[in-house]
Amino acid sequence: MKSIASAPGKIILFGEHFVVYGIKAILATIDKRVTVTSEKTNEPYISIISSLASEKIPTSSDLTEVNKAVKPFFYLATRAIKEYNHHGGINIKIESEIPSGVGLGSSSACCVAAAASIMGLFSKLNKEEILGLAIEAEKTIFKNTSGADCTVCTFGGIIIYDKETGFLNLESKPDLEFVIANSKMTHSTEKVVANVKKFKEKNPAKFSSLCNKVEELIKRVNLEIQRNEHIAIGKSMKENQEYLEIIGVSNEKLQNMISLANKTSFGSKLTGAGGGGCIIALVDKSNSHATIKELESEYHECFKTKIDFVGVQFA
Ligand code: MEV
Image (cartoon, rainbow, N blue to C red; front, side, top):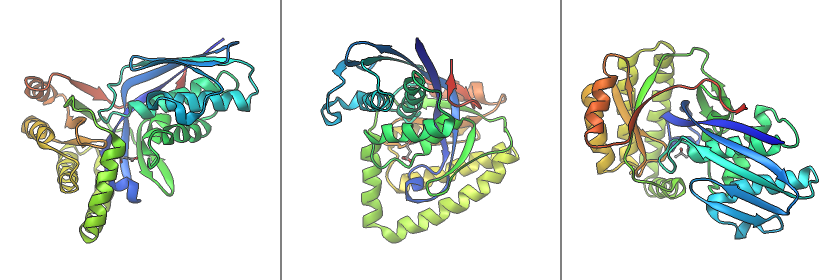
């Protein structure tokens, strides 16, 4: 029997990095997914096949010895084997439409889809249970995750996330479209988050004042999104980008992409950890074509995306 589950990638509309320090963030899932297929075997191995890595690891191995790229899958599989007393191994296949390491949540979507698929071999978990396991799996590669990315990849749609109190789904389903452009500079979220921590420690007053500004911005933009006010949301994206530049997670290439995108779109910003990765530009029918044209002349991986309202799903 095969157990198949998929989860969407994500973009952070507002509040990345500050969310790690307790400020709310607004995230949305995109129409690109990761699909994980799992199958029980009688051999004592966890076999993982993806475009990034292929590994066959004895079930008796210690997590600390396992290659970082496959740690979350190994963690989930060995946990399932123990919990459900399975005498054998598990084959796991990962197929992804989400480019990895560029801020679009490929790692979180993998953890969510893998938690649903692997555990689904034994028992169908609900979304809360899938999320809990996905966050634990993600922590094997990124200890200080705020949990925001896995949360949105599980529940889908647009969410307001608070590290302490959890999340709220936006009641309305605003018709937001974004152009995403990939700088093709991959980043390690863990390293960029560690650099922001250093910035905060060196500049405590400045960081605290930025947290207040982002908090105000999130309150305002929440209403702008509910009212589908594209011009106001675009302006707020530009403001958020300024704060991200101050904490040092933007760079020349991203800023160049943002200047290009701002010529035609309502507004743009980097999304996710930064230090490379992707930018997002808010568009509608009137300016999406021009924005893609502007960006794709210099940055070839550039596409339009719509918000996914489904989240994790069993096939
Ligand atoms: C990464 O997609 C988002 C960050 O805010 C880190 C986190 O929330 O765990 C940079």
